Length: 304
Image (cartoon, rainbow, N blue to C red):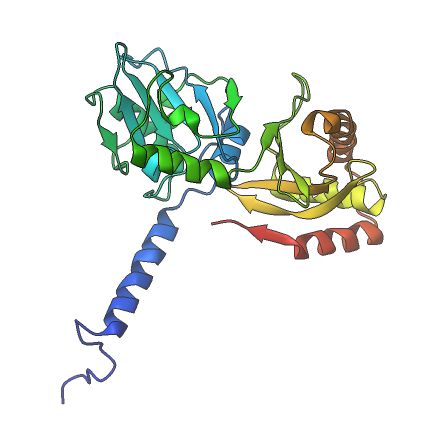
């Protein structure tokens, strides 16, 4: 007798569609790069821009090996969440987005492809999603420097200065502006590690500090501070937990919303110094520190 096909789904059945979707998800997961921006000076800011910063831009410095035809501006999100566009004008400007509608498992390759696309695209064109097959590494496309960021409290920069948008574009910008939350990047000095971002979420403000250290080492250091009662930014702050994204760990603090971002900078600097000392501590963990670590891990979330 032939092999039973009782468990084989019909080609047009819902089960077949679900199995195909699951295989596609598994294939994409297998191709996902754990830490796509590793090795770049701007790694922590690139992660922040991609994951939670509402509106910010930075002029990119391209690698000397790239024959740049026009300037390129990095942005959190572009109209329609496209990967890239070229703004028309006397000197056309390329824009690339980090928060995009269509992406692969390698956001660094997506960004590299989008940057190169802006150099040959015609003014007025846009790129919905980047095709990353055969894409160069982002480190080959960018000059390895920190980002000189401009944080915006609206999306009015979507339209060039002096240009009046049509009714549909104006309505889109107005809707986006209504949803934005005030944000700022803390200035903690040239020696600061990572990227600390403040956001006013209404009833609470938050500090999300993207850190470049190995996740396990950073979690150990946070546990040591927690056990010592030092896992905070002073009065009006509370450690809320952490999340993992793009191979990095991001501690999050709830803050008093009555105080603005700059008012938290001295406390953040002090915390950064305490954390640096805890990271250098190579003594065996105490039982209390192990309990703290287990508790902190239970409050950790992974962003896909």
